[in-house]
Image (tube, rainbow, N blue to C red; front, side, top):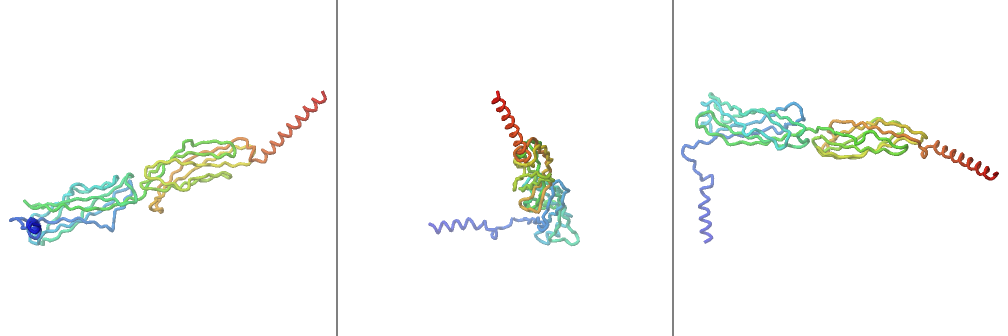
Length: 312
């Protein structure tokens, strides 16, 4: 029974084998359309910049030389780019023609016809950076003659990439703070990355006055659109009896691509004001002397009052 079953299954499969299939009478094989691209020149796009032109190469191949000669009388075929090209990620726009003409030669019909169609690629700030983005192209072709067979549907994937771009938006909860002498001043700064790829934010203080110091975050990683809060600590100078110091602090923040540290975004600047004011009786030598003088005066006054009470 098992042998009979295998024989029956084999008999059912034989007609499905392409080598045994018989073409119907009057059947005309269709030309073949193929899409290719120069992968050695992948489009590298800059957000909000002018469009880059990239050629999609195509090949229109007849099944035989005789069919090429017969089709020459119709003059041409038309490639339809349908549906329009689209990319996997947002922010990439592709513009180009809806159709492309494939010319036929009546004097020396070509068995294979090749050509290319230009398309314009643009990127917005929403496009992710430093990664390959697949763009899909789909096309088929029809001859101009009556009852001419259409080609297969040809597809191609074209990778594009977008350069690193963006900045850091920053604001302070309170941009002007004051503290007693010698005490540190802590600023709470909210930061948001507008870069199109994960970045390291480099923060530096510009032109500190003598005696002032600042403590900055060492390494800060942010994803596109991520908002974080960091603390900036400013230390005022000390050692003076009367303190009235003001530091206009400028912080420069630059996003650096984590995938390629050689690529940087646009630097931005945040202005802060730190002020230290009051009497410093602890860290200044003059303050200690003043305390000693006050204590001495107090002792003298106390001694006089005691002597007076004794005499009475």
